[in-house]
Image 1 (cartoon, rainbow, N blue to C red):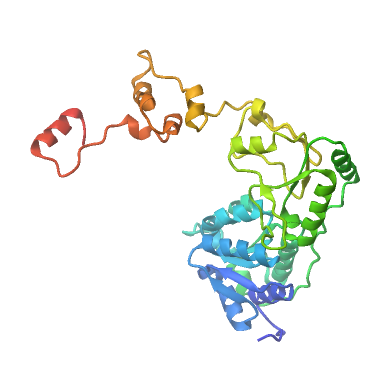
Image 2: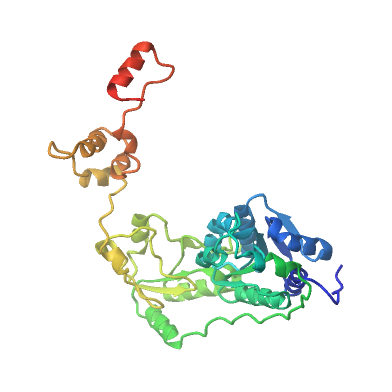
Length: 388
């Protein structure tokens, strides 16, 4: 049913408008609040609808589809609890600048004043994992909101756009097709940053080109980048995590910044200058002391560690050798009993990292009861010692 009807409801106007804008796939885990979209997808047959049995599968599939196809898919999620189940992969997509449009169902506008079992602050739940959030208000403007969300997702760099869809405006008549909205163009090139990058490459100092996002997805861009590196003597590195990277025969291999902090610092230590192209600075997942921070001077962004990382306590090393050089403080007779119990295995543990993590040594602090079924004598012994 490709011919556009004269009259349609809000959900059908959204489906037809998104398809006209280039969206071909909808990954869905719908509930009763989203049946209007299931009905529109079934009647129009314009999009391929893929059912996911868990919301995390839906957003993970949409994430992978956008990374490989280079264009966004649409997800269909059920209320705030369903979005919460999908949030982990939305976080990954947002960090990787993956384009994605989420349609999140909500209770009917006239029903939102009641405390229904699944009612929640949908906008508040969506905001931390989305670059753009809007809630539809009527059937006539519903498709226009959807096309705005698509334009936001397709902007450079890619973004996660979430449109909240109250059930009644999807069923209500009066839906109108909306024209495509042009996505925002990439930010203009900063000529001063370009001049600084050229000066860094010509300075003779050890320089690294740290590249990500679309650069790693283009064979032409990678070939040009390797030509610059061969001419200037600079090295090329990629971030630890990337949206996608071209690999295989006829393509240039690029090493990544290692994920472990010690290895990353060792990798970046030889460089005094860094040129960042479509990637943020390589912040670690955990804070490190200022004495071990990267000393590169970044051209595009500040290279110093933030104050929270400069003043962070020292991390315990993970290797046997480093642990022997910097052993944890041992318990003394003046320490409280829980400290002595927790520290007692430090001398004999074959895994030093267990003694440095409070969560991992909790099992040392309480003796385990004997195996069941116990004998009558063991039962008396357990009760005497205070075991259940």
